[in-house]
Length: 213
Image (cartoon, rainbow, N blue to C red; front, side, top):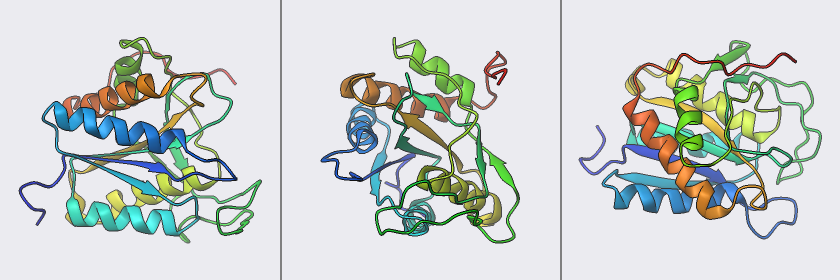
C-alpha cells in the first residue's frame, strides 16, 4: 500500500535531448509540482530519459511504488502552437531519429502482443478547458507520434490497464510546445491546472475536439 503521504499527482517530463541544455517538459512539471504542493495537492515530479524502454520502466516503477490518483506525463512537441492533451497511444516504435542511447527502432511494437492502441483515461477536453481558461492555447491532439513520448504514453496506459493493483489510477499524456510559443510560467500554470482538472473531473466535457484531417 502507498504511504499516507503518497502523491495524489505524479507528473513526468523528459531530460534535455539532442544537444539541448534544457527540456520545456521537465521545466514545466517541476514548476507545476511546486504550484500544486502550494495548493495542498501532494505531487511528485519525475524526469525521464529520452530512451525507448527505460523511460517506461522508470515510470512504471514510480507508479507502482506510489499509486497516485493521476499520472500526467508530458513531453516536448516542437512546432505545436499550444499545449495538447493526447487522445490515443499506439503500439508502435518508428523512430525518425535515434533516442538518447542511439536506439533507432523501426516498425517495432511498444509491447509485444499488446493491443493496437489505448485511449487516455484522463478527461482530455476538461484539460483543454483548464488551459484555455487561463489564457494558454490548448487543444486535443490525435497523435502522440511514434517516438519516446508515445512509447511512455503507451507503456503507462498498458500498465494501468493490466495491473489490478493500480485500479482507479488514471493517466495520460500532454505535449508542451517550445517556450517561445508558451512561456515557462504559463506552461507550469497550465499543467498544474490540467492536473487539478484531472483530479476533479469524473466525466469529460462533451464538446468538439476532433479534426477533419
